[in-house]
Image (cartoon, rainbow, N blue to C red):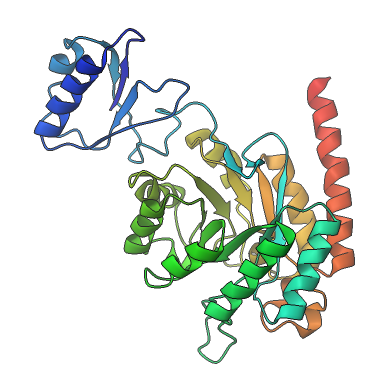
Amino acid sequence: MLISFLESATKNQIDSVLEYIHSSGNKSQFVNNGNSKTLILLQSENIDIPEIESMQGIKTVKNISASYKLASREGHPNDTIINIDGNLIGEKDFSLIAGPCSVENEKQIFQIAEFLVENNIKFLRGGAFKPRTSPYSFQGLGIEGLKLLGKVKQETGLIIVSEAMDIVAIDQVAEYVDIIQIGSRSMQNFPLLKKAGELKKPVLLKRGFSAKIEEFLLSAEYILSEGNDQVILCERGIRSFNDHSRNMLDIAAIPVINELTHLPLIVDPSHASGKRNLVLPLSKAALVAGSNGLLIEIHPEPEKALSDGIQSLSFNEFRKLKSELTILEQALKQEISN
């Protein structure tokens, strides 16, 4: 339920409405919708709508049909823009986040960081804790990897993204990074989602590889319901019957998600394809379909990478991708302006 107050509503009038809502055992949350006097009821049991409508200071009361109240565009029609040190995700400009699947050593991560700085990329994603299908695969450097990422941030000013796998590690991750990633396998780790919401730090939430869009948005709702409105969605491919790629990039999900939610959406073509030769065409498709950016895996020597080298771009391949995306982005803007 969405409750809008009159511009002239007083604090006492708003407090009276809140008291009535909370006395009925319901939860509510104000939303930033260009109007600080907009309230969303997260629960609406035993609520008498005519009673609320009759209260002083009320402008409108309407139901939100979506189960994800805070993530829904019904209650928040304006796009959310995540601002991190003046760098925006969700704005009209296309954001690029790049880095290795895993932080392997100091030389490797600084080589990548310096490359990103040289190419005016503001966001570095690197894995310190790695969920791997096989228990014998490289699991990441853990806290040592986080310390290296912290050192990179301190010396280069890059915005750091890294994954937290559980509620024990998330506090450690939050200490060193700017954006906490919650990976595909953890999309429905509800205690982790709630903890990420409590930390009030930007969260990059990846879609589970078998998750419906509603389930994806409800996972975001867990974070939002804890008071953290800085959520970035990431489409990274879903499990399918194909055998020509690691997953199937759900291109149709991009416009659908943009229609359903105000949250920014980026795409991870590296995990969607699992093959570096598919990353560029899928990146172009994601841009045209309306995503707000990309998450790209790169490595100075992909063939020597400790994890996911087969889908990681070399530096030259990333330069080509960035160049072609810039041309495409400019062409799309020109077409729109005409």
